Length: 221
Image 1 (cartoon, rainbow, N blue to C red):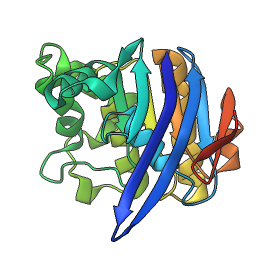
Image 2 (cartoon, rainbow, N blue to C red):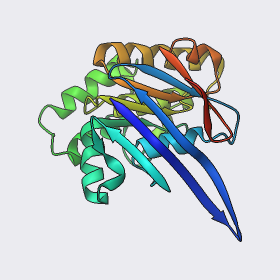
Image 3 (tube, helix red, strand yellow):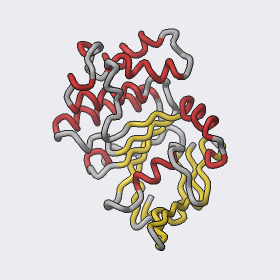
């Protein structure tokens, strides 16, 4: 379960303080698919980064299965992230010097789970339709193919939580539909809790519920 309590995030620009998130409270039960929506600047990506422990809040708590990640050291957070969280970025963030297979294999190697890793990597790439792209580098792949590699990598360690920031935002409608279908399939097969930031109604329509942010606050959920 993901629990967010009185979460705030502010930044200082010169002499001014800008409030990005203003006391967010919400709960996302295990196994639920939640779509986070709202206009640009409403705090969607900031919230996702806080859920992943990639940023620190100004105040408040983020609890993953009862553990407050805002109190963890960077080393402990890195370990927990490897155990519990898969993250899909809009811009893919693949390592250009690694093949598709090596990109998917990397989190398993970093977690010390090399045994069976190659089989798992190839199985995931096959499931996302890249059976013939194991040895291709990111520069040799289309945007849609790179996003599929990123999806496979996110599920490599079978994380109970998947976070995705505009996973179809850089894709054309046809490719975006394919990636959306893959996300839903992997969600169902891996039984992951999913939180996706999106502007797209077609993606949000597939979610169990929508969390609407407006001006840094939850307008509906």
